Amino acid sequence: MPQQRRRRQGIVESLLYIAVLIVVWVFLWDSVSVLTVLTGIVVALGVTRVFYLPPIQLSGRINVFYGAWFVLWFCSHVLFASLQVAWLSFRPRPVDAGSVVAVDLATRSDLLITLVTMVNGLIPGSLVIEIDRARAVIFVHVLNCAEDEEIEKARAQTHRIEHLLICTLGSPHDIQALNEYREERGLAPVLESRTIRARARRAALARRTKERA
Amino acid sequence: MIQDIVTLGLIVGAGLLSLAAAVGALRFPDLLSRMHAGSKPQLFGLVMVMFAVTVQVFHWGPISTMLLIVLFQLFTVPVAAHMVGRSGYRTKHLRRSMLYRDELSEAVARAQAREVAERERGDRDRTDDGKNTAQG
Image 1 (cartoon, one colour):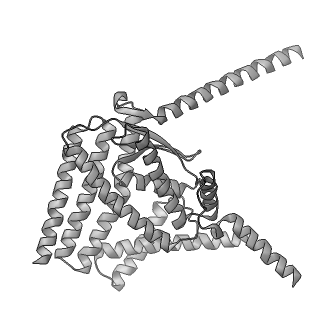
Image 2: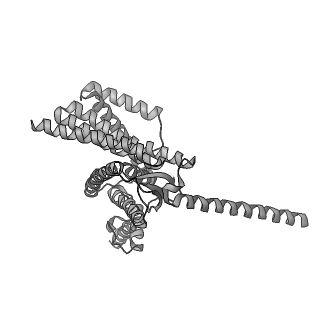
Image 3: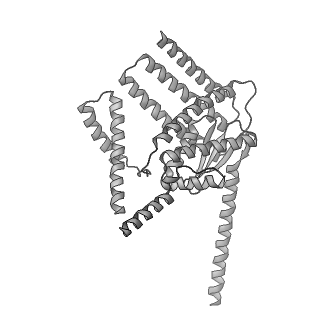
């Protein structure tokens, strides 16, 4: 049963990639016609066969509410941080020293580490310069950061990115790890009904009621 | 009329951001700081230019192409900046005086210490084995 489900998930994922490639192709041609869609299918199949990449492991869940919240948060941060970096380059006083901050991530998923790294690189003022994949530690270079307070601020920002991304598309394991991390810091847990533990509890409950019936 | 004013504002903003990127690349003190100026304000400027074109030419064709341009920029810019920063750090093209705190060098030192300890332990085990076999 699990094997069958995994195979089905693999087929769904590869169909998803092919659909995305077809959409990109249609966007490039600026028109939706039988010809562009058909050539798009051919090109997508060819590209996925010739340039084979190891499949990305999607978690199979997505939360639209948190996704929208993440996009809003991201856009506002890019806007303000752009202005801040612009001011730093124009102001008469030169910038202070930067810092390289090690941030311990809760997740171990490759996809989420990559996304956190990319979002960090897109927000001005922070840039990931090294990743320790096995320990899920990313090293962020922060511009104009010569005070302990600012270092903590940068760390909090990276954790905020991770929190929003896990809530948007993290797997139940990731949410569990995030909640354990939050518990250590005395924060309230998020999306508790989606964790792997709650899922196991629900499955056990269902099994018990089935046995009784 | 309103269209033109919005376009004007967006393009002037984009130009100023690109100028800020250039000034930053010139004035920032070291490679890692310059990477911040070189990649990000310029990206936001490009997005603003794309919005300006969209306001002028409100057709599905150009808009879809612009979506692709912005999307690929979003994917490639951070990767390029990461690779330059990483290789810059690894080849030691950085000014230590411009780093207030460097937790990566601490991590590298810890990893090296661990490696040395492991190698020593390995050597000791091997000599122990040698003694045992010699005795046996």
